Length: 456
Image (cartoon, rainbow, N blue to C red):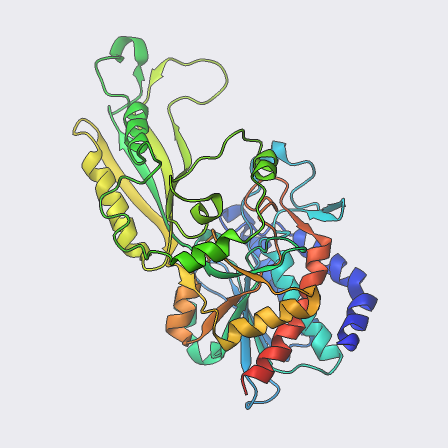
């Protein structure tokens, strides 16, 4: 609609500057020293929602970081869309690899560089500005609710209880999330699913204290060596996960879906160049896009032990640690897979060390039916602004709360992401294309328009 385009063009500088202001707040949920920053960010989100046109906005405390809820209800006969996002961000480490300050946003070559630029401040803020566009042009076609949380990056630890105890408040016909990626502006896509997650920390203890590696080396098991051997055994020569029962619940993807996935543009040489690797690695028998979307994985997210400071210290350490995560696909349940992983590691730990595993967080995988009204409205919205039918793909990441939304609120989730896989999520120099930010603001109102028409 021209009235939307005119409003957005007139206010695009304001939209961008407001996002930059939000990005300057170091809302790192994982670190206690940022507790006040979390409150500051939640307060700023509340202010922006009110300015955009929400009639009610509240900050709800939780045992962790607060939840921001806002709404504008125009007509009980119209459908209600619940927009979910998160204002918390990943820790910025390692700081020395950033080209600019992680919380000092810089625009270079048409890209916003800052922690949270894409994940998820830039993406959820598209919805706030799209909402403002519709309100200010008197063209809001649906009831809208916002649920912006502060703990997604630490597993949405308290959101489950919040959702369960606020079902009436959050009641909606569809959940709309922009926390995923598309292939490109030239080849738009929609995620039809995200993988689930299991995350644990492992601790291996050998002797009761650090030992002199000359005096005791060769006589006492080194926990780092033992842990390394355990980890190495988790994949076979075909990079297939060796844990008994790991694949038992995996649903075989139909050939038709694999064929559709193969149509997505993919340049292996460009992919390798972007990542700085000479060869790719993964489960034999599957393409790169299949490995990162339709297959489960097991990855080491961190490993440490012994002396890691400057210079040499000949120590046989008492302990070794690792952080391990598994990405799960439809029909795999996070709770069950955590048990499968922990019990296998416990079984293969030799008797001359002590084994301890601490589950951290997780969530079940989620799929959106492509024949649903919700998906069709999203597809039509992309077509309206891109001039192309989006390619349905599966995202490799996880949004743990989505399965809970469906069970607790009895409605489907649509992933309308405008980021790119190359946006350095969770890495130094995270970025978000300014063009993608504006394209999201342009597209989102069309979803509401088409959804309202189709839902009648």
